[in-house]
Image 1 (cartoon, rainbow, N blue to C red):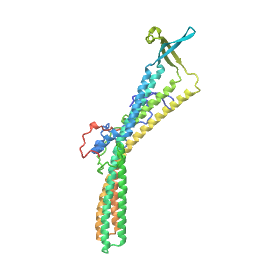
Image 2 (image 1 turned 90 degrees about the horizontal axis):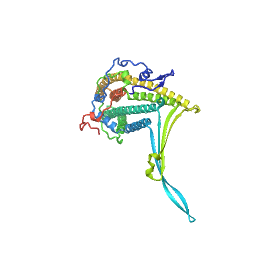
Image 3 (image 1 turned 90 degrees about the vertical axis):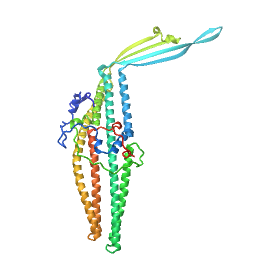
Image 4 (image 1 turned 60 degrees about the vertical axis):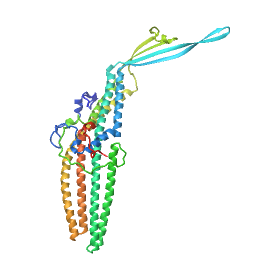
Length: 471
């Protein structure tokens, strides 16, 4: 995060000259998160450890090493760094040299005939130029390039964090899809068991063919659900493989286990968030760059001082070219002031100022969004925990009801419709429980993404066992 901001005009026409002035453009940040009413300690960045899933951590590390989007972002940052080095070169004189070789032809009349003699001719030229840093024009250009580099570096950090979170999301989604597929298979087995019972009852005359047809229909529906769930899990695997930079062959394996979570520990506070989120840092750096561009547009209307010098020599012998006595030197100092440009420079300045004001508005919007994302995640964790607890009870009771309904159906006290209804309730409750657990795990990742949490490095991780190595 940059420590100061460039001159950026505010709505009153004044210029914001430091970061404190920029922070005054956003609403006052409370000292604690409203969703919890407490202020937490600064995040440590080790957010993956709470999932107690070494495979997830290894996959995140792999994605950070091989994801093509991240590689592209890193290349753009290197390009911006090169442009910053080029901008710093403006502080030094530019120097160019040239060497030429030719010949002169001389004609001599001898006895009515003209003899020509060719004499070699060598030339040497040296040109230098340097612009004096009047008004801080050159320094402003260098600072602008540095601000662009800071924004690009922050974009890279934000992309790393985003890829880490997306990989965690994809891993949780894959396990959820496999868990839902497993539920569908168990449902098929239960419906097949009911069909066997119903067929036996029809053969013995206890049930009528309607119940048999109903049991067959329920079994076919369960088979269709398996196909749909299998499609979802296959697509989830491919999404994860693309994030990892692998061929999307749906070959990655998972256990269908969704991590259980402890109660969320509140971290940071709204003010601290502004110094942690890399995307907010990028917005701040772009405010700096936009302000410097507004200043550059103003400098374009002021005089510039450029010193130029040249040296040249011509000789028939090459060694004479570098003879100081034969070298002609010319030094020129020029002061250039734009007089009339048809309003072009003033229009460019107005555009730069408007763009700088837009960057401040973008910064304010980015800050508000960052605060909302943390508050949403804090609130959602509480509500999702309540949802998971209630859904656990619903699943357990639905399971007991299904067992009771199956016994009663076998005893002939209820119809097949009552049994299928009980099975459907159990299936729905279990599916919703899996979804609630996955949503809570995904929200926990979103929380650390919103906090600007760090990303793991391969060097900081313990060596995985063979069973933990992602396939």
